[in-house]
Length: 319
Image (cartoon, rainbow, N blue to C red; front, top):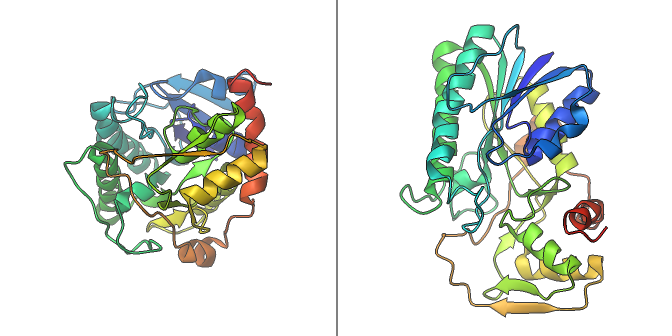
């Protein structure tokens, strides 16, 4: 197939490029580098099946020739208020990527008869009151809260995607992505794993907010990409959760990070004074992924962290 990937220079987009090129597809990457990095796709420069356009998907976009599939992954995604590339500091760009970017990509899909896959997020569930989260759960969200620029952009993108499917018959699919980690992720992402792994590799005490009782589930990037590709190849149109169902507290996670990395500095507890409505629990129900895609994660947390450490050491100048 000839496949367009928006956000191709991002963490997930670049891994998707690698995977689909390895399966002999022709890949067209698109990114404006507002959050993605040219370093993530530099190794593809000499690949004859890869081409790249520096474009902002929220503006008019044009791709010459037939496009068989579109994977729309372009959006700021970091919840770190201190990060210049996080959605707190790029609120308008984030909403435009979810609204106008999705609309532009769906327009190409409608014109070309392409398969369209939207990268959505577990954030559409808000601070959930149901555990684990199933695709039928509508969420507990605040449309005017600090995180809303990302959450609501994705919720709108899902609605628009289903409208194009129902009204125009576009062959669409939606993946709801849960916490994912691995090489090429942004060390300043603001999420628990990059924060804690960075501290551990620097020999610092790991910072845990509150009592560390908030939970997350962590999926290694190779597993996530495998699930996304299976969804791309499927006939499924409704949202599918892709993530690791093994829920653990942040305290348990911090203890595991210290053990895996051999960090002896321990853990520091800090008052949780954050005002971003950070969800207290996050765990996917992956029943539909198992049944429809025959997919489930395979890489253990210990193995995934060990695969990620060399990248972090390189970025931190420790390699």
